[in-house]
Amino acid sequence: LAVLPAIVFLGCAAQKVPITDSSFEPYKFSAKDYVQKVDNFLVILDASTSMSDKYKDSIKLNLARDTASKMNQTIPELAFKAGLRTFGQGECLPRGTTSLIYGMTPFAKADLGDALNKVKCTGGNSPLDDAIEASGPDISKLAGKTALLIFSDGLQMEDAPVASGALKKAMGDNLCIYTIQIGDSPVGKKLLEQVAKDGGCGFSVNADDISSAAGMADFVEKVFLQKAAVKDSDGDGVPDDRDKCPNTPKGVKVDADGCPIKVAPAPGVVDSDGDGVPDNLDQCPGTPAGAKVDERGCWVIKGVWFDFDKAIVKKEYARTLEEVAAVLKANPALKIALEGHTCNVGTPEYNQKLSERRAKAVKKYLEGLGVSAQNLSTKGYGLTKPCSSNKTKDGRAKNRRVELTPVK
Image (tube, rainbow, N blue to C red):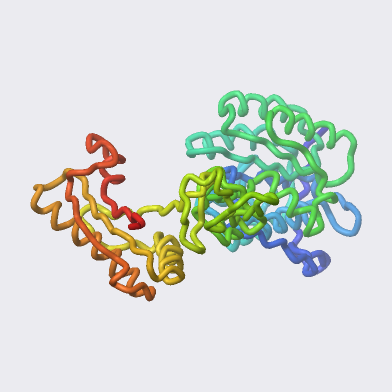
């Protein structure tokens, strides 16, 4: 087909379709529920002459910009690098068959929106292959994975699959190609599906299918995001944000709130301490009331660890110590020995004093929670009782601790 010399501008009063649908309310992704699965994305926007053709109540270029704008509004502002490249020869665009008019730069909705607003004209043939080839230098040196998103009608661009295949071969698993068809041409649909297929890990959709907020949210999630891993610190199967009983010992069965299930003894079976473990299976009889036990019936008290050369109780141990305090206050006769320890960095004399300060810091913390000082004893062991090897950084960190031991 001959190249059409006509240039079509879209900024005149006759064009009443705005770049964004005023009724569109983008879905808001929660940052805590999702993480990005790509690091970069590049939009390729078709501004060739065929994009001035009317489609439904608008022209194709307006629909392409509108769809790209909806995508821009829906993408959460995570740490992406983004860009916008056009192809076509409209007078509102830089010289040449293809131009990078935005990026590659840290993603900002306002900046990408401004760049889309600049594409107001169409002209020339449809050199998608040139745009794909030119995008190689745009994205090939970027770290991480990249999504290439092509908004086009798919017409008059027979060489595009060759170019997409070559770019995929060069970038391998770091590239996925997605095509968004503007219009309903079967020829264009077939070509764009082939371009996406050559990308290996992308897909092709029609703009009509992602025009709604729900449709666009589904598209954005598939291309850009993945569900964040659910944090379950104690491994009991209940996420931390719903776990009312954190630090459950391993192997203990829990309810929907993450709290140990108290199993009533069978008829005739005695559970003297009421910890849910029958006496004939209880390896730790006499468990204090309210204490959480493991499958052996033993009260498991997690220790408190400290930063290097510090004797400050960190916030992460607040809940552990609150649970200990609750048990102590419910059992006035119960006493706890607080035993401080250090790693082997420094002199024995210095570490002895440091271990004592650590034990006293935990004692002071528990007293602040209402525990009587008479129920707490402290002792420092310095570097003499390591629980792990001091030859490694991790081992030394484990040795900087205070152990809490019930005293009978």
